[in-house]
Image 1: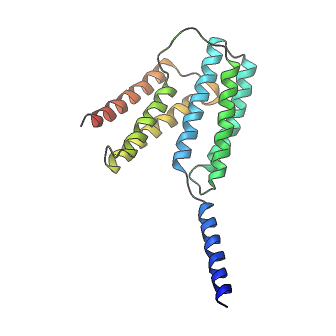
Image 2 (image 1 turned 60 degrees about the vertical axis):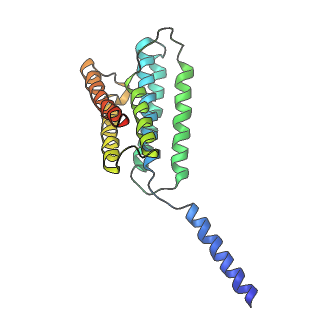
Length: 189
């Protein structure tokens, strides 16, 4: 009798533990990371098309793939899903990013970091500040919200492989400069 009760309790605990590992929830870090990857891929495709490193057919093929991934991203965004679904989306983005890089020829000129690189770098600073508790949760949320807004604006501007205008690039750069200045101001405190 004691053994069956003990065995029942152990089975119940095992089930509770395993169901806790596979719970559905929202994954905001996976969401932001996917957005970062989409920004970088979008910019790489646009740059490759501008420089001639990608043919229009290659660029269109990559953009079609990215559009499909973006559709799946929108379906996952702000919803409770299993982490495995986000992992699969990230794998698809990694494969696409690698395919774009392989298709491009190496450029000999060195350019200043583009908006996508700056967005990724600022996300790293915010994540680092969050881990090291450099600022209050209100400030952290404000910084993250500003960067999310800039990232979404940039994604909207470059949707469908469209290159940004000088004015749009300048606007994004100004917003990124302002956010970076504010982040650096907190670092020195």
